[in-house]
Amino acid sequence: MTMPKNSPLIEARVIDFIPEHERHGKPFSQFTLWFGANLQITAIVTGALAVVLGGDAFWSIIGLLLGQLIGGAIMALHAIQGPKLGLPQMITSRAQFGVLGASIPIVLVCTLYMGFNTTGLILAGQAISQLAHVSNATGILTFALIIIVSAMIGYRFIHRLGRVATVLGIIAFAYLFIRLLTINDVSLLLENRHFAWDKFLIAVSLSASWQISFSPYASDYSRYLPSKTSSTKIFFATWSGSAIGSQISMVLGVFAAALAGNQFAGNEVGYIVSLGANGVMAAFLYFSIAFGKVTISTLNAYGSLMCLTTIISGFKGKISHNSYQRLAVIIFIVGVSTCLAFLAKDDFLHAFRAFLLFLLTFFTPWAAINITSFYFVAKGHYDNASLMDADGCYGRWNFLGISIYFIGVLAQIPFISTTLYTGPIYNWLGTDVSWIVGLLVPAALYYVFGKQKAGVFTTQEDSH
Image (tube, rainbow, N blue to C red; front, side, top):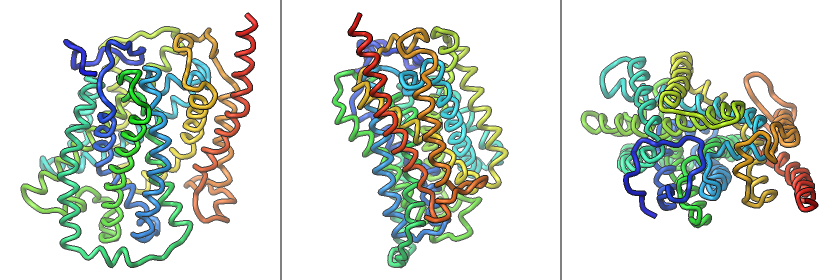
């Protein structure tokens, strides 16, 4: 379906249902969006962490690929929900947690967006600093302004950014890989194969958490597709775009960290560009890095707008927004991320690793419950009117869903390793596999007890 005539570039809707006559686009738009969003510097840094944390190049690459496939499939299952429901992703959490109860995971999702925007501001700030010969602080502030404008325009502009980022990313990454293979003998890195389960699982966890972290806004960027769009095509377009794009970036990060040693931390952008060239080509690489971060950081800011509007509408009992409110919310979110960027920029890799572990603990239970609810309990059908009404069938607080969510979080504690706490099973295994527990436990519980509750509702409705 083509774009409706006279449709404005600046989006008018926020969390409203998208009627069929406003739907447009094709599944391939999901590929270009997620492929372009993942050809970026933060994904490079994530791949580099697999080596920084002790893995060798060969097994790190294999582990990262496995994590992409697992986490990317989970994320793509969320993207399918967009055309079916015509709603942003976190609105659907009201079916599992209640109209007001959904605020619990949504607050955590907002933390996710702010955290990723913080990393984007730090790394894009480095790129702008080198490109424009200004301070890192000026680079961060410049990038923040760009994100505010991009998120304010909305859905159509974000997909256009994705297409441009895909083209620029392919050129930049192809050049970087050619240079890397030309001036270094990476075969020596790949021949050094010392398999260790703990290091291998670290690589799997890094990429899986990267992919799963997109789940809370996956359907935000597919909800304008026509409702009859093939779910299979949406799944494979999203899965392949995100998995391939991030794997390319993370493999480059693995090689960069293995070659750079201690030179990588604190100068991530500068080192990546130094692999390429000086002069005009270096300027292009800095621009490409900054532009790649524009795409993903705009996704984060736009997703934050969806989340905060969802929280506010739940407590107000109605959807209410205008352009000034929308701008105020975006400025608030980007402003918080900017403050965090100034605080974290001097210890980036350490702070980013801690942040990724935080994501795994709190978002895998949400993803497991949301997927189980949509595909196995509700079987793809929600009452959209009740999602917007605290007095509807989903209620204000769904204590079953909330309880299972927190059980999923608590179940991970014995397996977890953070700067604040290390669980006893982690000490035995030697690696953090809490995210696997965080997926399986709440999914199983919600399938059993959520299905029983759904059966009760069905029986009551039938008796009327």
